[in-house]
Each structure stands twice: as structure tokens, then as C-alpha cells.
Length: 136
Image (cartoon, rainbow, N blue to C red; front, side):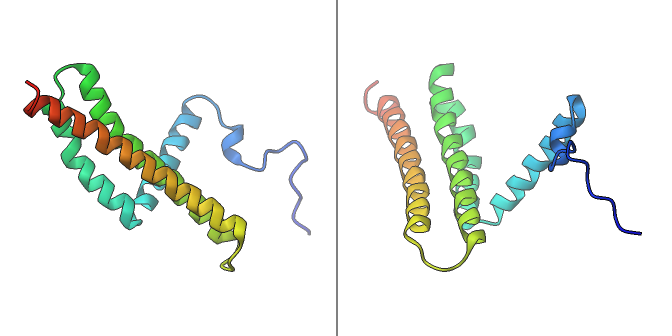
């Protein structure tokens, strides 16, 4: 007896067939798997450890909810962009280990996105620190 082939109407991804709380539950599990995978990346791990210090510090440094949101948000943005960059690199590496102009371009652009997120974060934190300690 041969295995039956899936019907043409069946989704290739079982997540697409889920709905409601079942979909949310499974999506949360996939997100946790992504965070665990990110933890295996040295850059993300360093940023996550820095976030463990910077996020509570943002509550002390920020003088209003807007300042706290900017400080904390800039840290979280760095982590988000790092995860996206890692996703790009992983997808490129799955295609193959050989060097290709487009693969290099994709990886370089992901790296540039991380750099810009870091510069934004540093700029926001520098401005907040200057305002707090040198401007009154």
C-alpha cells in the first residue's frame, strides 16, 4: 500500500490551518525557539546580556515614559535587527557555502542594518546621559 499524497487543498505548513488560541500558542512556541536559536549566536547573546543591564537602567535614566520608551526601545530594536540579520545569514548559508556576489550583498546589508541600529541606540543613550548629567 502506497502512502496517500496530501490533498491539493491541504496547506504545506500546518500553522496556516490553525486558528484562534491554538495558532497563538504554536506561534509563541516558534518565537521561543527563535530566541533560543538567537542565544546560540555570540552577537545576540552579547546584546541580550547588555539589555539585561540597559533595560532596568532605562527606568532610572528616563525622566518620562517617552524617554524610557526611547531608551528601552532602542535596545530592543538592536536585538530585533540582530535576529533578522541572523535569519538572513542562515538562509544564505542554507543555499550553499560557495561565495556569490548576491549572498555577500545580502549579508553585508544585514550587517549594515545592525550597525545602524547600534548607532541609533548609542545616540539615544548618549543624548539621555548628556541631558541627565551635563544639561541639568
